Amino acid sequence: MTWLKLVEGYMPMQMIMELTGAILLFCVVNWSLNRAGMAIPKFWAGIGVLVFIWMYLTYRIYPPIPFSVRAIYITVTGCGIFMWVSGSEREWLEFKRPIFNVLDGVSGFHKGLRVVALIFIPLGLWGFAYSSLLPSFEEPIELRTVHPAPPATTKVHGKTFVLQTAANPYRVNAEGKYDQEYGNERIVDQSMGRLMKDVNDPNFNPWDPNAEGYTKYVREGGEIFFQNCHFCHGDNLNGRGLRAFAFNPIPANFTDSGTIAQLQETFVFWRVAKGGIGLPGEAFPWASVMPPWEQHLTVDEIWKVVMFEYWHTGYYPRTWD
Ligand code: HEC
Image (cartoon, rainbow, N blue to C red; front, side, top):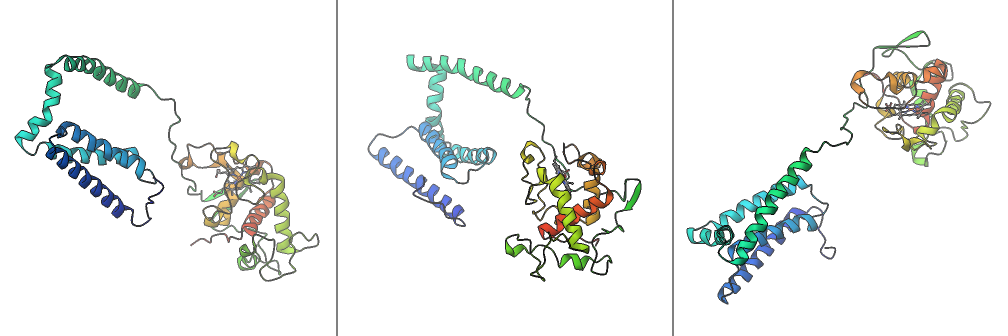
């Protein structure tokens, strides 16, 4: 039904009004047919209402509601209809009559119906039992912790790093001292559509071969990134690399505020060094293809590429709070 739109925010009201309208219409039709002496048997009226509500929930409601919720609504509707048909002894008898007619086989037609029912009901139940007992070959659902608690220390190339106190040796200011603020002020300006532009210095050129200090290290990190990481993590660091969709889980999207923006720089250092295979037990079971980069990169290269990822995405590493 596209001509009668469900309006966001008014949907519950609309649904109640439409259902009430439909039920009222049924009552009027039922009443008029009664008056005209062509009463619909209670049995069929009940089934009709149930089917109508089922169709309404399935085809009218958008976005579609899950089967389990529809089943709850239909059960409640069924209870309502049951109360309606069993309101008085006479109505209850009237409702039951078609069922008893079939069970008693009052006519040739009812006898035929009884045979069909006796064959198909057991057959249906058998089919249901069979399909629910059939073993399924689907993959089990895997719940995973995307950012597990990191270890207190990590050993890379024989050197032990304490994650709480280690710092990126390349995140330095003009005097060569560790300075998080300095780096934070020189990240890519997000509002410029990811142009490689310094917010404070319009002449800033991250690809300048003569750049010194922080800028030079970011550039070197970029080189490492485009030699090793972009196949999976993508040219724009958005996790859409050439090979990304061959993997499950897919490579992390660093532009998403849920990845490196959430993490301390040493956490990212640890993740890059140890890869998917180095994740602690709580992050399993999952099959991350993130390589353990300590096997291919030096400690310095890892720090640089991590800094590049922050610089390019415009996020600051989280501090230990
Ligand atoms: C073969 C594909 C592949 C390559 C190449 C790759 N990664 Fe990954 N990376 C992944 C996948 C898949 C994940 C997500 C699963 C995980 O966290 O282990 C990931 C996750 C990460 C994370 C964790 C982000 C988070 O939110 O926890 C970091 C950091 C990361 N990669 C950095 C790198 C760096 C740096 C390089 C290059 C030196 C690199 N990756 C190269 C596949 C790859």
